[in-house]
Image (cartoon, rainbow over all chains, first blue to last red; front, side, top):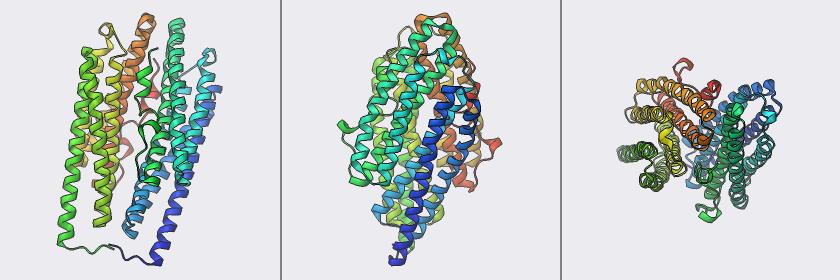
Length: 239
Length: 239
């Protein structure tokens, strides 16, 4: 195993701090991207939507940087089990944040494919849903930075509200489509936007579950956990 | 750094082989789950759908097993950069396979929410799309097992066909909804099934890109790559 001395420990802590800094920068950019994508959707602002698409490249680049730093650090410092577990969690968390960025980009790309969304009353509900989702992503990443298992649990509990938002938007959009066959394409895009937001909420829950495991060494209790990714919504999408 | 001797190397190779075995078992189960979910959808077979949902627990358990084995191996054997990179790739690949299992489970859960899907002509196209997607997942995992960068590139190229399938199904379903407002709920579920299949194709591409990087040390060329996750489809979903 590694020869551990003060120098090694200090160097490892520096790497770990740099890693945490990169992750919080990445998280901040992903939150920003999601807020801008939803604003672009609400305002029909194509320039803002294009900025979000462009900005996703930086999020992807940060993920690559974190991966390389993690592999280097593990190879050079051979961290002990706990530190290693935190680095592995960091790797998984950035891959989730990268995906959140992709969902924001996907929402942004749909802006150009929709017109007359103003007439669709689901939009204000989508905006409220996205505000909650951004909060959950922010708190999930805070729980990682602060190693706060309780905050992580609260994220998973609040994700249930995201699923409720999703189910009511699904029903509203299906009804709207039945009454306005001419707006079915726009409504179908909004169904996917709602699903993307619901998935981002699930990803915030995934991060929170990883944080809980790293901090407490235990998996989160069933009762504490939010809906499983992709399932809860489907269970209730009765239209 | 680690004291490397024959024993260490042999033990590491055994761990690596066990890891590869677990990943291929996981991959096989995910492919099977997807095939069964689509059969259940096509036949309206609720029992088969329930089996898929139940079976996903085993896929999740395998992911946890791979994670624990990887962390143990890295901590005990302190592998050198190349081996370490392969283990990190293995971690990322199983998290993708776990997600493919979730998508299959999500499709299975929608079976109970749909009736009269027989009348929707998009179903046979969805079945063809799913056959291609299962092939891509299979080949992506083979390319990892065989360290075959060329096979990985072919997966990303064929993923473009998955996106074409998706876009034509999106248009077909939107048209069907306009003509059959009574079937809008079923059609909306099928839109999500098509999107799940398209996402699984993207995940096969993600695996192929990781394999290409591990094997060649280089990122796949733009021109070689399939559509980015979540974007290609949105670009063309004109309904």
